Image 1 (cartoon, helix red, strand yellow):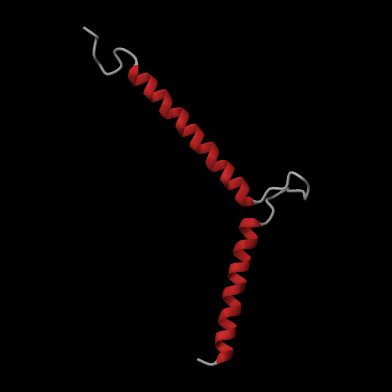
Image 2 (cartoon, one colour):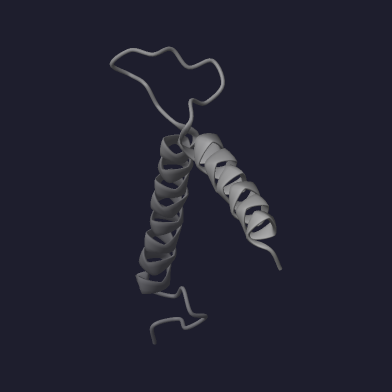
Length: 77
């Protein structure tokens, strides 16, 4: 391949990487540029944290339920 072809391939790859970074680190919909600026990545991290916290609460409830007397089908006798 010629140097020109390598240049075009490199430019195309650079543009693709730039577009991906702009999408993930750019502003989310209806975002204003102030002290509360948040990117799509920030929203994704927050959503992940909320899902993890909800799953943790759910598992903790299951542990408490399993520890209750008679929860495993036993009558305690």
